[in-house]
Image (cartoon, rainbow, N blue to C red; front, side):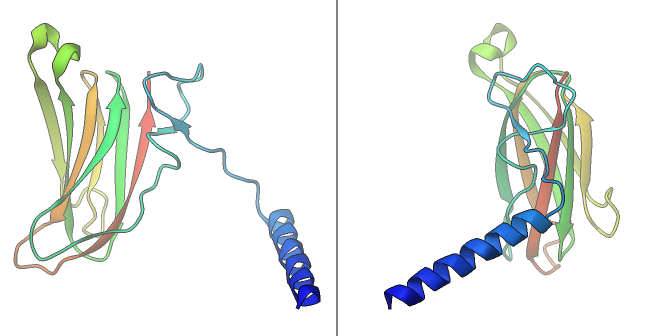
Length: 158
């Protein structure tokens, strides 16, 4: 039993080593936005981890809301989708609390239905003020079937 475990461990280590050696050049990990920014601000950045989401699904009614985090003003944001249904998406930028001028809240939004082709939304914009990004995703029509999607967020700070 012990010999079998050692053999399995060696085989697994060998497989991992071969995978690492045969892999293409590793991708540069995305920088994380958390209020402080790297010196090179022209690299594409993700809000957390890599710039892609997990698989998300929408049922017969309602919408999904994804809070993406805080960004400064003049930030370029691109959100692209891959889905198995006809989604529609809206991005909001919300500024509240002490950050808002004169303590007044403000918000902006941008929506898209098929801008990415193949019934996929694509949202591209530059923020006019700093705030929290929220992505809202729903199906285009109540009469259409629900489905699942992935989204990718790319952020370029000034």
